[in-house]
Amino acid sequence: MAYRRYAIYYTPPPGALADFGAAWLGWDIASGMARTHPDIPGLPAPIDQITATPRKYGLHGTIKPPFALPPGTDPEALARATARLCATLTPVTLPGLALTRLGGFLALTPAGDQAPLADLAAQVVRGLDSFRAPPSQAELARRRKPTLSARQQELLTRWGYPYVMEAFRFHITLTGRLPRAHAEQTLAALTPQLAPLLPAPFTITDLTLAGEDDAGLFHALQRFPLTG
Image 1: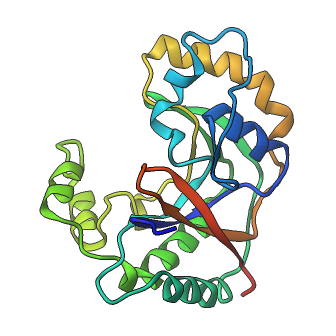
Image 2: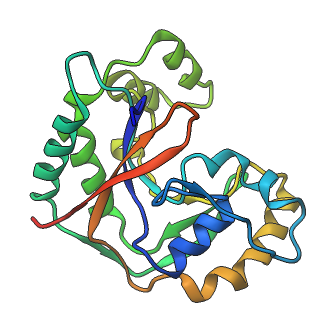
């Protein structure tokens, strides 16, 4: 299958959290298949509405944001470069993950000192930048929101995305933007479902190369262990 964009993600390893997240979102990035939503009482709206925005990305935390390949570069070369880079990077361990509200959406966020994780992401963004085609003016205009700081504008221009380097904040998105009351109600409904599944400690031992198909859905293509 040909993919129109690629990304480097953290995806949870096979297990209870990955299974629940795939069902919650309705898309399994690992198998590339739709999943039936679970029956969760107490939600303020149907799950397919709550999860419509993040569904196509699957359960993941972004390390290098989606990018198109430049002319003359092929996916096999990207995979080889990713493998070489991951062989130089060390795993990152944090105390755990927590379900939190970030502005208008819910996400899993790590506890503890996130500097090692931010450094990991920065190395991946820099190390694979030659595989990123420059964004079009239309894409830059779409991302250039008035809420961005001057530094985020610079990051957007340099790296094609405003939330990298020191602006990076790792999170695993679970919902689209919700009204505050809906976000709090969803948080209350999800907490007992997720609490037994969240890892403590939370360790990133590999990264996933993902591809976006023509329907806009992301597929996990290959995992690369961090062995540096």
